[in-house]
Image (cartoon, rainbow, N blue to C red; front, side):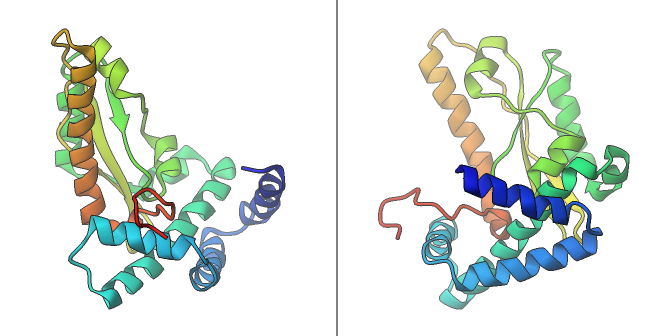
Amino acid sequence: MSEWRWRAFKIVQSLVERLPRTWAYALAVMAARVAWWFSPLARPRLEYNLKVACPELTTPELKKLSRLNFRNHAKAYADLMMLPRMKVEAMRPLLHLEARDLEYLEQARGVGKGVMVVSCHMGSYEVVSAIWSATLPAAIAVRLGTPLLPVCVFRLADDTYSAEAAAPVIGRSTGDARADEMRVTQELLRHIEGFIRRHPDQWHVPHRIWEGSP
């Protein structure tokens, strides 16, 4: 991030972090509408990426999804800006966990080598990270035998959050470090692909990541 963008971010943050949560979100939604209409590259690149991830989408569905995606991402920025003044105790009721997700966590912890939580650019992951998370790369998991827990964080309609987990990925070593890391990475990516397809409105990636993108 360039210095002027960082300064602009800090100026906006100094305002947003003092606002009530509802006001901060209202401001974020307004910013998202402007950004959606006047983004020469971000919007077409996002829609291209969403179409790759969800090829079954029609053009009207894709437009509607990209608007919602911008809206959710703007709210995630508001969350990030409000984070320094928020208390973990006040945030904890905003996070919903299903029994199955906690079972995956306990399953990973049962290995007895700690747990590494692996997530992706979805939802307000910074906020949930302040409540419950830790992330490290596949190479460490293979070397230490530490279970990797794939987790997706997404926003619910009432602006609370849900953390969805998948079955732990165990990074066992077979003696071929490169092959082991590739196997673990591919398994993690399969879980992340599932998260994206189930919650494409939360996957905000307005960058050129595939050939043919604008």
